[in-house]
Image (cartoon, rainbow over all chains, first blue to last red; front, side):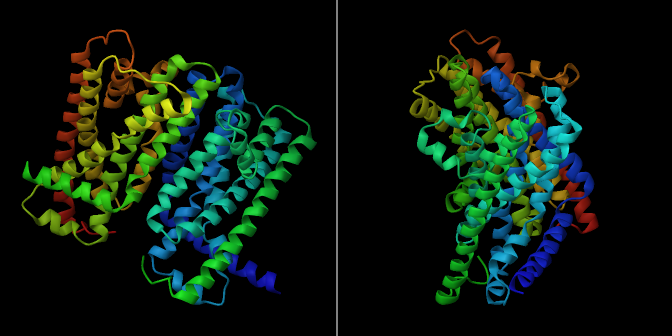
Amino acid sequence: MALRYSLRVVRYSAQNAVADFAATYTWKSWLFGWLGRMLSQVVFFTLAGRLLGSPSLHRERFVGNSVMTCVVEAMMVVASSAWERRAGTLPLLVSSPAGLFEVFFGRSLQWVVSGTATSFVALLALGPFFGVHWAPAAVPVVVVVLLVTSLGSYCFGLFLSVLVLQATQLRNIVSNVSYLAMMTFCGVQVPVGYWPAPIGWVAECIPITHGLRAMNALAAGGRADMVGQQVLEAALCGVFWVLVAAAAFRLLAERGRRDGSIEYSA
Amino acid sequence: MRVFTASFRFQCQLLRRSPGDLSVLVTAPFFSLLFLSMADQAHRSALTPYAVVAPVFMSVWSMSLFVAGDLISRERGTGTLEGLVATPASLSVMVIGRITAAVTVSMLAFAETWLIAWLCFGIVVRVPHPLMLMATLATSALSMAGTASVLAAVFVLVRSARIFQNTLSYPVYLLSGVLVPISALPEWLRPLSKPIFLYWGAALLRDSLSPSDVSSPVGRLLAVTALGAIGFLAGRLLMHQVLRRVRVLGTLGRT
């Protein structure tokens, strides 16, 4: 019963996400503006790798930067969660019977869908130009890997958004720094092993590290169990972050109720 | 000139009070780390100037786009845009003053990327042509402000600047060769690079970090300046037209 109620809250909140997305983009501005920009980003970093980086990692770098686009979008949850506080609706959400976490979980799901679509187009449309071809049977698996990576990153972003709800002026900095840190340390441009071991340990807790390994294995025609294991690990990272985010939202709401720190404008 | 300096000062005060607006100074070291790690992993340290210059221009361009869009959105949001337009001071000059301030501050990205190269990779990037470096940074900053003023005029007209801001980042980095030489682009795209001042500025900045002589420095600096001046004049003209249109239609404050 409680789960059904929570899912209903997520569904209503996701409707809000769809409305938000429709107010931000038309299909033309998404296709020619946003998608064009993200495809340019993939080409930019892949060519940067060709100029500066190791030629043996050329294919991995294209795959990595294509998958990265869904993470960039998923991390927008940090900024869009902060909009609630700036709009003055956070106290109303805290005082309503619906759980704060469920509301925020549904609130920014548009980025997961849009991000998955962006990465999918990048991998399939740009792939042949960079020597990456997909067998028809691999295409549904590509979608699954992207969805798991995007959703896992979204859960990580949800946790960060709790921190940003307390300092909304930092929303863009946190969102940008988090995706750039993932791009730097999680194996997108250089292998994770290049960095000192402690950075590698942290990278193992981030969904994109495993999502990338799964996608690279898939692109190289690797065994299904190898792909499956990395997808599972990415999903486990996502579950870890969603639990941390849920606990953090509960703490935020409890503290706000107790000390009145959630005001009507920020 | 008084409007320009007052706007410049005002933007500096705004930046001091809202650290969130200085996000490019936080992201520049990451871009630098990213490019330098690629070169280091492939043992291509000779390409360090590319890895140092690109984050500077990416940061400054990103900052000018942000300020050009945000200053109009914020004035509109606080209901002060109509007041600004009604004053005798020129909105174009005010916009240029504010963008120049933001661009000047974001030039600190050069010091950041230089420090990242030194502290994280032990690479001391030498500056064999310091005068050329200073001249390139100064002319590029002014050209950046001039070009961004065109965007500010467009942002007065459109409802949401965010889509334009996002769209004009990576396509411009690609086209202007801030990191990857334009020879990597398809031949039919290359003529589009030369009218972008970033193309000339980035190449000059790279050359000022290279031990060999800088070829035709005056002509290339003039190209940066001339393209900035064209941007400024186009921005003024466009702003004039746009303001006339929104006055007639009564849509200036529309959000």
